[in-house]
Length: 224
Image 1 (cartoon, rainbow, N blue to C red):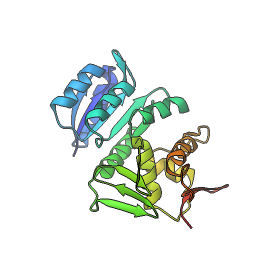
Image 2: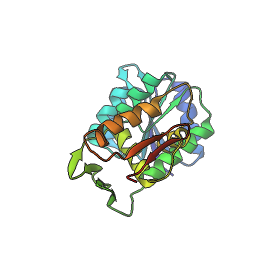
Image 3: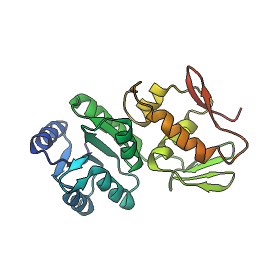
């Protein structure tokens, strides 16, 4: 059971989501704008936030950024009719953990909610090290050769997935499903875009490269 905040201005959609999630024994609150969503978030504790992008007083991306200023850990899932690569990239850049395009299957929504809630669980270790890379899981700080590296929330999650699966080839499909909780759409290239972002921060200024492309197969994180 989780406490869920839904930010959606279409009353019919909001009520359908609320009813379905309450049938799964979740506790659900609804807000219908950026301002009311932010106020509700600040006044009550929640386990996960589900937000539309197009809201009457602004963008769900704006709401996401404001929430991230206060809380880096709470999962945020965006629901929207905007499904281009640029839209998805803006959503992830704003701090969203996942992105579903309307219309969607409610069973898939529930599966993604469960995945995000499991990912939020506190790790039993405080840090992960690989070669000269160190990740502090408590503070979400990243260092390479002792130098701090600033990452966006999605870049951090991508790096963490790479490190946890070091020395193993990862396909674009697996990365999409495990990091973005979505099926890989061969018509978009957001996986490659984010890996390029991460490479520029993790590898560009260092002699030893950690992220390698395996043509026709995917990517591998290794120092071998």
